[in-house]
Length: 435
Ligand SMILES: Nc1nc2c(ncn2[C@@H]2O[C@H](COP(=O)(O)OP(=O)(O)OP(=O)(O)O)[C@@H](O)[C@H]2O)c(=O)[nH]1
Ligand SMILES: [Mg+2]
Image 1 (tube, rainbow, N blue to C red):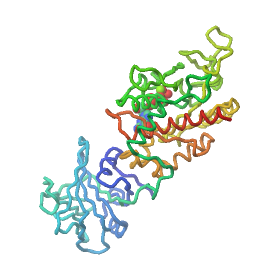
Image 2 (image 1 turned 90 degrees about the horizontal axis):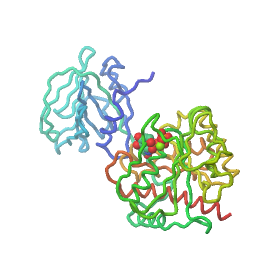
Image 3 (image 1 turned 60 degrees about the vertical axis):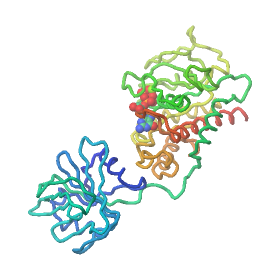
Image 4 (image 1 turned 30 degrees about the vertical axis):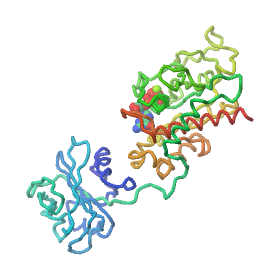
């Protein structure tokens, strides 16, 4: 029988921040599921390794962490790593109070469990009552509640998380690498003399992060966050026309040799969003800048605004499928079919194709805390494999990124991840022209 934690994602993230990035929680016991039977808690949770006990009130969460296991029998446990914590609905972070040296961190008997004298949960007649006291055994939380009935009690194992012993792709997270990647992008020269610019088209479902990626490249280059209009505005606000974004090294400066092109999203069904016909027209360079796409109205190539015989510089030189790591599993069959059809057609045009996997910060807690874990994360690795199989490309063609979104400032490591994705795109273009 399964049961879900009462802990919402935001609160879980806040609690996880109390720990090393490489841990996660696994729910073992939920009071309401077991009729608040404490003997069941002991039966299920004893000797299961490090754990947190969480006590829920309407607007507060309290709890304690023990690095050692919950003991099988009644006894006291010494644990220098133990702490108690609190989190209120409106708090931006959870607060942790470490055990003071020399005090017993934990104690259990048949009817109760206690973190020092600070937090005690006692069972009586199918209910759990909680005592919270301000004592000196745990670094002085200002707590005071006596025999208060709580809404829920949960015990979660705190277990080794999802980081691999070493990265599955190497990327130096240094200032020097950031500068080098930036310099190489800014001084990039297209592989053949005929081209002054390479044009990269971003294709993907709504909300995948296409516009955000363009904003992120600009942000990393300018050194401050650039929010493009239309980012995240759903559903009608999304861009429905062909829009090219020349990239500049500095705000207002000369464009570098890279232009990114944004279009209408690939729809969930055959009838919605950018059609195969229109996508190919853009890639072949027939669609004029600003062309407005409409459902059921394919681009008329013989219209005056269309370019029947485009030059190489008007065409797309690399297609990047942007997919959202969080939504991969829910992409519909017709979207997947569309991507595969597009892939086949684009391959016939000898245009390189890559997959940009965005939102990786939302699938892995460690990456959310620190983007440098991106290539050590087992979860991201799995998502990259899923994206590769969805799009039918080798795993090495999938580039995980975390776009800038709610941040106010850029940071070195995220710049490195964004720049390194751009570097792979430029390599793919160079390699294609070389053969
Ligand atoms: N956490 C997180 N959020 C992201 C990331 N990339 C984009 N977002 C958010 O996802 C939402 C959609 O991003 P957009 O860039 O507008 O997506 P889009 O592909 O341009 O979507 P349409 O224009 O509607 O097709 C926005 O709220 C972004 O802030 C990412 O890497 N991580
Ligand atoms: Mg967009």
